[in-house]
Amino acid sequence: MIEPLAVPAPLPATPAFPERPALVSPAAPAEAPLFQDGGVLVTTERVVARGKTHLLADVQRVESVRRSPRMVPVLATLGLCMSVGLPALSALSVSSTTARGFYEAALIAVVLVIFGCIARLVLAEDSYRLVLHTRAGAWRVHTSRDAQAALRLSGLIQEAVAARLRR
Image (cartoon, rainbow, N blue to C red; front, side):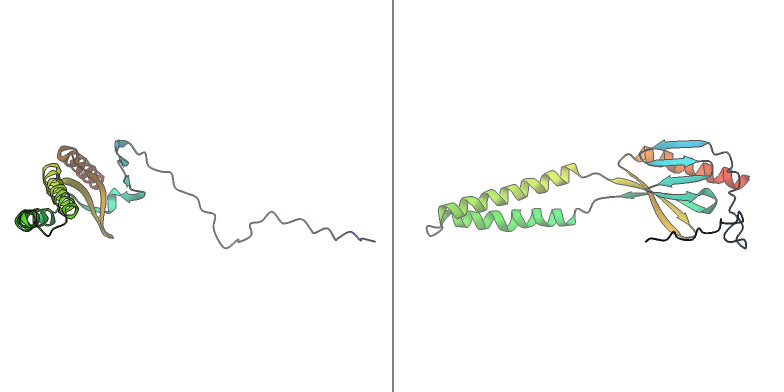
C-alpha cells in the first residue's frame, strides 16, 4: 500500500537572500530621440547601433572616416592580362600546333578578365564610416556610401555629446 508523503511546511514570506538588497532601477532620465535611421538610434543620453549601446558620457571623440577600395590588385591583373595574356594568345593564334578549342577558351577567359577589371574600376565607390572613440576603444557605428549623411550624423552626435557635457 502507498503511504502519503509528508506535507512540507509553508515557506516564510521573507526574501531568500536578506543580505542582498533588492535592485531598484533609478528613474531613467527623459531621453529625447534625435536621430533614427539605418539601424542607428541617437538620443540625448546614448547611441545604439549594431547591437551595442554607447553612453554619450563615455564618448570622447566622433570621427567620420573615408575608405577607398583597393585598386592595386585590379590594376595589376589588368596590366598582366594586357601585357602578357593577349600577346601570348596572339602568338598561339598563328601557331599550327595549338589545339583550336584551347586557344578559343583561353582567349574568352582573358577577355572576360579584362572586361571584369574595367567594370570593377568603373564601379568602385568610396565608403564612409562613423567611428565613436570611447575609453574602452573605437567602435564603428555606421557605414554609408553617402558622404553627406555620414557627416550629418557625425555632427549630430558631436552636438549631442557637447550638450551632454554642458549638463
